[in-house]
Length: 117
Image (cartoon, rainbow, N blue to C red; front, side, top):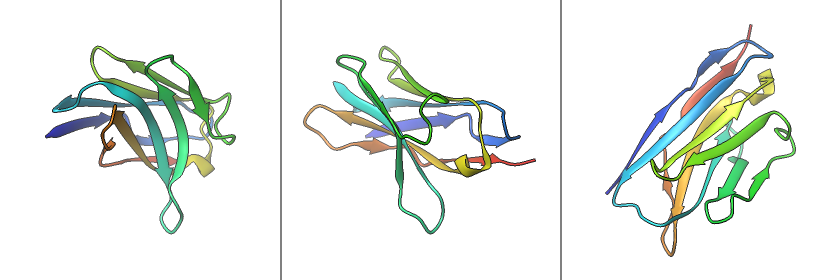
């Protein structure tokens, strides 16, 4: 069984910053891809950022390029999302995921990020 511990969501003013983190533990090995999605109620889940743990390659949604940074601590099985220059349109529930080699992804429960005055 896989446990995922999340932290870092909350309320921030426009222009502010937050760092989200997810730590995976339990029966999860050889993680190959980690990343973040977000979802606004009534809309489809949107890919925010993804990273290959093999070579560090990253992909970002156009809407967050230059503002968000994904990083990992492979020893701790932890993925981070540093979000700078937050705007109201970044308000969403953010989900992390970990994809092991030859296995299905494990997902966090989701963290609310609200950008508002």
